[in-house]
Length: 80
Image 1 (cartoon, helix red, strand yellow):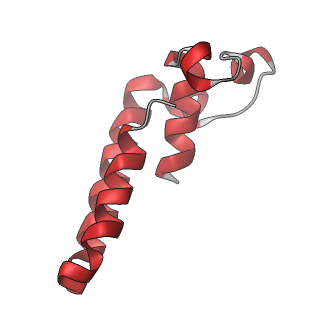
Image 2 (image 1 turned 60 degrees about the vertical axis):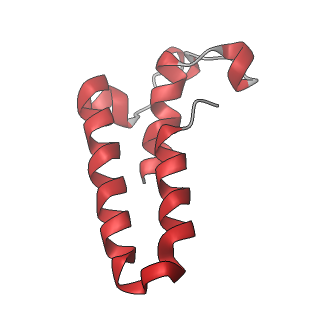
């Protein structure tokens, strides 16, 4: 879910050249997105909450869960 919310955020804030695709198409096509439903800042907050929950859920796996937790963090911070 966090990945999709970040995708929705990037459609609003992202740079078309960096993303490799046009931005603003969700609003232009009147798509229901997390940003359109929640607003930009609440959507960003939700990404943080979901990422934190994912990382915490991986804690019982110890070192074996570190790479997956790092992946979740990277996805939350992606810009393309």
